[in-house]
Image (cartoon, rainbow, N blue to C red; front, top):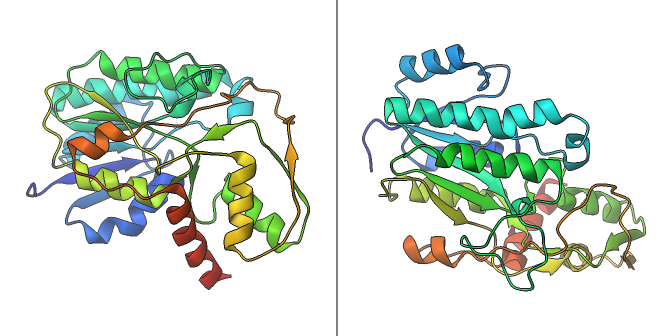
Length: 289
């Protein structure tokens, strides 16, 4: 345990930020949860004074522009958040000797590989969102940040947010017939599991420059199988059709499962299977519905 550890969590209204907020009381740190209104991380002056005033030791950067379709048209704002701001955060972290944990994505890959992507695989994003996330990684890697990490994750979901799981749950509860693509494969990730992993490893990271790690729940599935499992766990019999053509115009990787062996081995971290973690998530949802 590091004494008097002050942690800034940016993008705290998002899925991961909300999950970190939920579990934060279980970890004896001092937290500063911010969103764009309370701290604009693209503003050098405001960021500088915030870090100085509150003596921040660690930043967990959850801030991201994540609308893959809109990103194609809103390129400036997407790049500002996913890339430029990451470079600015990294610059400040080097200046003040601050640990930085930056969240990236499986969308840095093109999806042509047939086995789960590891940290050594060459990124090749298919869309502008993925391009900006990769450029953000590069912006961070320009700096030698101690005890810092880029964590790529995938298919993230959490309570009451706009994500695949909650959309499918709503359709199932309405008894709506569902059409889901069966040719996109990835690793579903419960944001709460990722939040726990981050708060677990931040005091254990001992590196002289930024390391890249992958974190998702273990295993992978198609979008269709994901929806079928939700249907099964909710004990419903809504029709879930195989669908091979997505309505989304933006290219997405067909296979973006993540290999998490590195983070699991380095930190002796047990990672739940995607099925087990989905069960835990839906079990909590059922209590609340």
